[in-house]
Image (cartoon, rainbow, N blue to C red; front, side, top):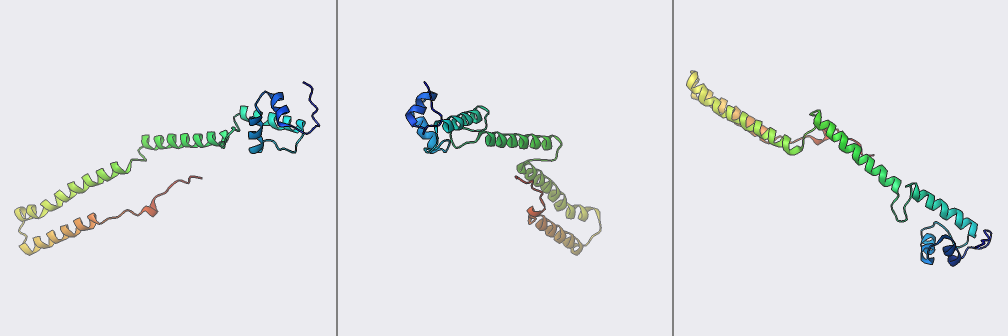
Length: 161
C-alpha cells in the first residue's frame, strides 16, 4: 500500500494502514491523539508517538497516566517503609495502644492514690480533718486526670505534598 503522507487523512485508509478498525481511529480523535484536519503523515507521527509513550509506560489509552500512577504507588510504598521504620525504632504506636497503656497506668495510679488515706490513717497520727484534706486532693487529682484532653496542635504531622 502506497501512502501519500501529504494528503488529508481518512479514518478508513489510516485504520487499514495501521491494522485497526475505524472505531479505534475515532477514539484517538476523541482523545485528542490526532485531529480530523491533519494529513496522513501527521497522523502517522502522532499515533506512533502515542504508541511509543504507551510502550514506555508514560501513557495509557484511558484517563490514567501510568507515570502518575507509578509515582503515586512509589510514594505510598515509601510511606509504608517510613512507618515501618518508625515502628521498629519505637517512634510510633497506634492510638489504640497508647490509649490502653495510658488507661492502664491511670488505673494503677488511681489505685495507689485511693489507698493513701487508709495507709496514712493506719501508720500516722493524722487527724480526720487532715485525712479529709488528703482525700480531697486525691479526688481533685483524679478529676483533673480524667478531664485531660490532647492538644492536637502540638503534633507534627508530615506534609502529604
